[in-house]
Image (cartoon, rainbow, N blue to C red; front, side, top):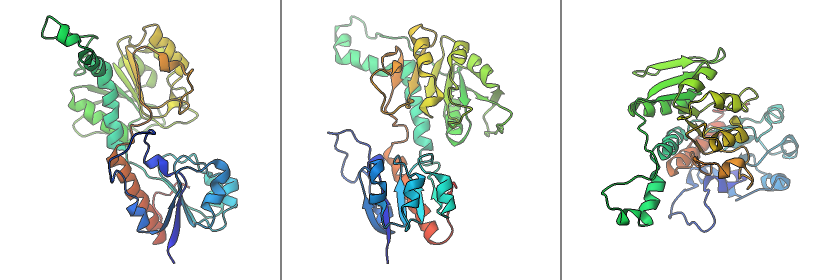
Length: 331
């Protein structure tokens, strides 16, 4: 009998604003349909998790919480797959007590996130959007000269790129920065293992020193009790007024009020953020109106290629489970 596979929040793999129509074949569920009877719910409210997952031995989720009560209420449940890397939306202890493996999808978006880091950084350094808008508004047509600028343009070659968290994404960011001629520095703590990147010299230093030394700080560490609020008023105060902050990791790594104040007071050249502490953000989030702050709606992971890779790895995880050799188990 085919396995029933239930996806609780299919919209997370095709995140499109209402009115935007993705091209045909934008993302195909075929890797999962080949493994069993697939039921995809676009969204699942918390109170409907049990109803949507009822009778399914395999349940997949991205943002929909599967708590202990839901796990206890689903006797047929044998496997939970998280369609992301982070797994805090599943009660891992409750699943372990039931002997239910919980798997994740690591590494699917490394290249895309690293690319987005530099999309944000280059926008801050070059102001491409502002210059393009000026051309659209006719400023170039009215200009008496062959060239004009509307904001300072900064060359990144020779600048120091400070990386907090040198995991897979941090390493890829280091490679790209190095290829652009940047110097690479990384945060070192006693609990962190120093890693080597062939052909790239890494200047390891304590976190506080990194904030004071680097021209760009980019965050790639996990969100823990120790890293929550990592970028606070004190560390922002140590940064050069010409420095940039980039966050494509987790919103709560940054004290948003402190960052907004630093930007408003001109104590920081700019910030590029793809994540915020609450998503979607409330209208009164202080960063939404902050100067020299570029914010994108949590899209660093969302390239077509990354989502296709996510789908393929999720299917491979299920296939391995069905073969009795579960992989990427996090509990």
